[in-house]
Image (cartoon, rainbow, N blue to C red):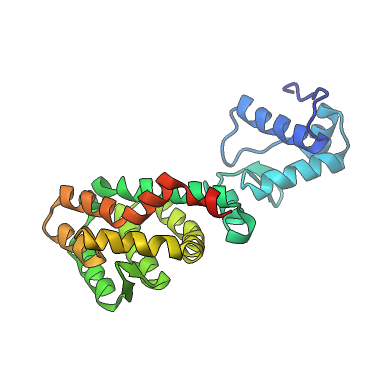
Length: 242
């Protein structure tokens, strides 16, 4: 068997075993559906008790890397990319800096989706967006209720046809709601200033760009709609308000 022996390190024993197992799977080029050695074989190869092996495998199972199958034992599985993020992307479990980084990622992702949206959109998508805008609840200065914001942007994610992007939207939404509420006293004056300059972009404006086939206008519109977020990310008020 591949050498699974571990050496003395500063990390805990289970951490070392988890890393050794992950390295073993990669070294053996194991694919989803492939069986892995039994707990006893792994324990003997590494030189630790089966309880340690069991705990390390449990961690890998939580990450979606392995699972138990009847009559087959433990096998390699294809992990969900965002499985770990699902477990931790709760405002109460994330620090301000982590939420700040997730916001930056969301802004970059949505602005970068323009090409996929124009590539995949059809008349039904546009009709759905029209209906979403019609029933949407705009509070003020292009600020929408959390439900309206989620529904509109979820549709844009759906139009990309990328399941990973769609899954990310579901995960990040609670974090965005929390940030918008916590820093509303920051966002409101910024949006007021954007409105004063005549650069406020609504959901309806974005849909009109899509209907007109105006890719450049839509891209710029997305950037302008995220104007308050851009200023937020640039100034990083998280550090000042913490």
